[in-house]
Length: 490
Ligand code: NAD
Image (tube, rainbow, N blue to C red; front, side, top):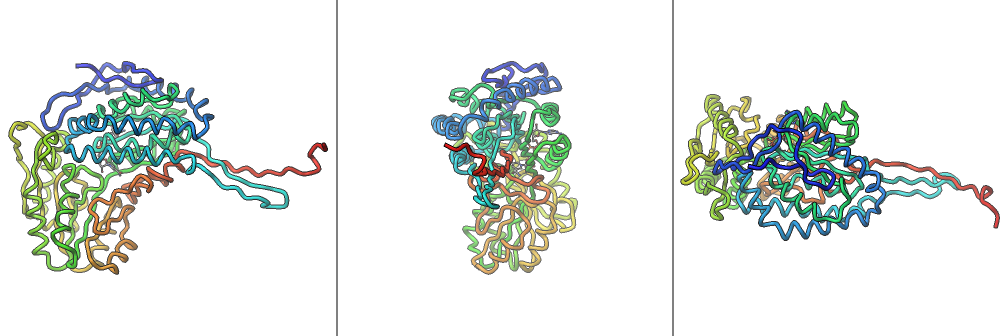
């Protein structure tokens, strides 16, 4: 099987690293490719950064209206190849085809928003800040920017950064997750068709050593990271210690509160979609489901909606939930369920030991519901990143808010209710960066920032929209005086 190539300076090139890891289909266990992985990928990083650094000199001088033209073409190519790319996402990442198509749609929307960079990059001008003196601010690109991506949205997350970075005049080095490199490989085959100068967009494969080479390279001016909190914290501190601008989005443990006045049927369907969609491997997956007041009916509705979910291989259109990413992931999730039981939880629905006909070796876990995890325990605070719902019964909205705000993550918090007053209080007081009111996955659209808080984000400016424009530019302020008496007389 062929080893995946890097894309450097407009060419497909072999890695300097001979060691590889397998890219494995999580449902069938078929090996889909071999990805370079080891310390010699640092030499690949050096080549990619050098190419990007040279390209920056001229790309940064190209007028912004011309810099966005390749993005219009990229949108068109992504749409034309959407089905093929969606299938690749399903094959390497495991999610259903509908989820893969949806993910790609969100990627395309970021390209569309980034086409507005000529307006978003505009700046401020003040005439006569003092007599005869004007002052203005301009936005200039930073240089070479790098992006390190996680496995769970291989086709979308790179687009929270890439189109904005290049539209602002930067050049870009992308490192996909070694678990799912094939999706962006397909996208880079489209990027290779764009009318872009060599070296503007590059891709280097690898793992930790590749990341470290990017973090330590003096020519890399900014790092955009998405992944687990442990690694996000590391990236933020090492990148910042090396003088780089860093945005690092981390993990989550998302609470959803259901008040007794919510529409039970619709809410339970939306909430189970949030918990079990993408097999629970979304950073915006609901995890702790908090019922306020009597919870008999809602518990039954959630149970029924979870139990009837069709688990299997995502390429089958009837399937509603795929496998988790690796067999290690499956063992980790099952271990966390066992730990929850040891802490005192009752298993209302047990998805362990799942076996799917035709895919017996797949990393499947069916929907699982735990009830009664102790509020002071470990599992109720741990990101499980698998199809597991924890049911928590509380008495009031204030108790629910106290519980939410005592957690160390802050990616998302949602409320289901028909009370405007409670909704207003919740959105004001819940300490999370993305709030859903009668919404199960409060994913910001491309024109809004993806606003994680607390341990779900390290940095100041998030991905997407205007935050991305600010992140990928540095401001320069000019104070100008043109004394009349200095002008040549005509
Ligand atoms: P991960 O942190 O294991 O890996 C992410 C990237 O970091 C990969 O490219 C990987 O090669 C690299 N990496 C891994 N270990 C490293 C190390 N020790 N040093 C340097 N680089 C390292 O994350 P994952 O398992 O791919 O993704 C799942 C996690 O991402 C979950 O925690 C999820 O919540 C989070 N996530 C967050 C968001 C968000 O917007 N906040 C979005 C998607 C996923």
